[in-house]
Image (cartoon, rainbow, N blue to C red):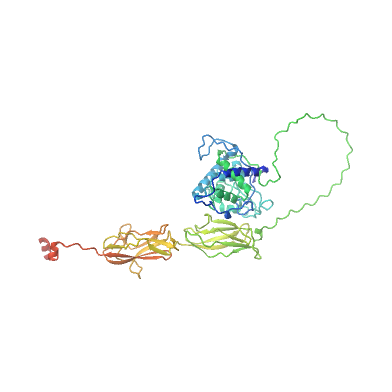
Length: 588
C-alpha cells in the first residue's frame, strides 16, 4: 500500500453547524471552570492559542483533518460494562476502537498520570484526536507493535491552500526534502516530532508512524504547559495548541464526549474510515448510487431511425495554447532569514531548584540586518543537565514577533550543578545555530539562626539535654536542601576541629568533632545529633556553615560535676578510714 493520507470526500456544510450545536450543548453541562482556589485552571487567556490564526506552534502545522461527526445517538455499551472499563463486546460501529490503537491511548494516558498528574489527561481525548487526525490509524491498520502498515502522510505544506513549511527533516519522516508533511496516526509535522517524539512501546525508537510512540508524544504535547484537562479552559487551550482552529476544537470535543459515553474494542483493521476532510471545499457531499434507479413510467415506443444527413466539412483545428508555467510560491519569512542573533539576553545563572531570572531572547534577521517576523525559532536545552523550560520540556518553539524577536519560556534549574547550553535554531532554515551558556549553582543560604534561645550547658562526662537546631534562609526565605557542616572548633580564630571538650558520636559510638555532608530540610531546618561532654570543663565553640557562606557560632558550656557530701569519718580524719588490711597494705 502506498504512503497516503487517504482519499476523503468533501465535507457538507452541515458539519460545522452540527458540531457547534453539539459542543454548545455539551459545554452547557460542564461545571464552572475554576479550581478550588477560585482561579481559572491552566495558563491565562493571554497564553492560550487563538483560533484560526495560522500555523503557529501546532503539532500538525494546522494540516487538514477529518470533519466527520459522531452519530447523534450515544454508544450502547454492553450491559455488563462497569464504570471505568471498556467492554469487549461489540456495540455501535463508530464507538469501536481497534484493539492496538485503544491500548496505545490507555497506556499513554496512564504514563501521563504518573509523569504529569496535574494535567488530568483522559485517554478519550487521545482517541478523539486520533479519530480526527487519521481515523484511528486508518481503522487500526497497524502491526502488532503498533506501526502502521504504510506511512500516513498529510498533504504537502507548500503554501498552496495549506501552511508553507519548508523541509525540516531532510525527508527522514515524510519523504519530502522540499516541504514538510504531517506524519503518522497523530499527524505530527517533522519539526514538532523532533522535540515532542517519544518511545511509547519501548523498542528504543521514536517513530511517528507507531501508534504507541505517537499517542505518548501527543499526551506530552497536550500537557506541556501544565494545562488541566479537567477544566474547560485547559481542555480548549490544549486542543487548539494541537491544531489552531475553532472548527477543529468543536470536532475533537464532540468525539471526546462521544467516547466518554462508552466505547469498545474491535479487531485491528476493522475500524470505519472517515469520508470528509477539512480541505474539501466544493460545497457539498456527493454520493454514488449503488443501484440503477427504477423508471417511474414505461419507456416510450422507439421511433424509426432518422434519415442520414450529409456530413459537414470538418473545421480547421485550432492551434493548441502554450501551457502556462506554474507560478513559484512567494518566499516565506523563513526563507529570508540570513542569521540569528542574541536579542539582549542577560547572564543566565540560577541556584539549583530555582527559576532563572533572565529569559533567553533571539532575533532573526535578513542579510541586510532587517528583522524578520513570523518565523519559528526552536530553543533546545543541550548537555548533561536536568534543567527544563516551564512545563518540564527541554524544547520550545516560539514565533518571532514583528521585531523578529522570539523569547523562550522561563528556564528552571534542576538539581545538577554546572554549565549547560541552550541552542536557538530557525525551524526550516539551515543557518548557524546560536548558543547560550547557562549555569546552575549549588543551593545556598546567606543566614543561619538557632531556633531556640536556651543556653547549651552540660556537666563534665554528661550529655547536653537539648540538641542544636538551626534554620537556614536565603534572602529571607527558607533555604531548603542546602549543604552544611558542623565543627567543634578550637577557638574563634582557629577553625580546626578541637581534640577535647564536647563531641558527637559516630555509628560505632566513637567521639567525632566534625560533621560533613549535612543538608537542611525543605523548610530550611537542620537538627544536629546529640552532643556529649568529656571531663574537660570550660566554654567551647560549635561552628555551623552552609554553602553560600552562612556561618553561625554557638557557645557550649561544660561545668564540673558537683562533689558528694563527706561521711563523718571523712570529716574527722580528712580522709576515709581504712580497714586494718588496707592500712597494712598502704603502709608496706
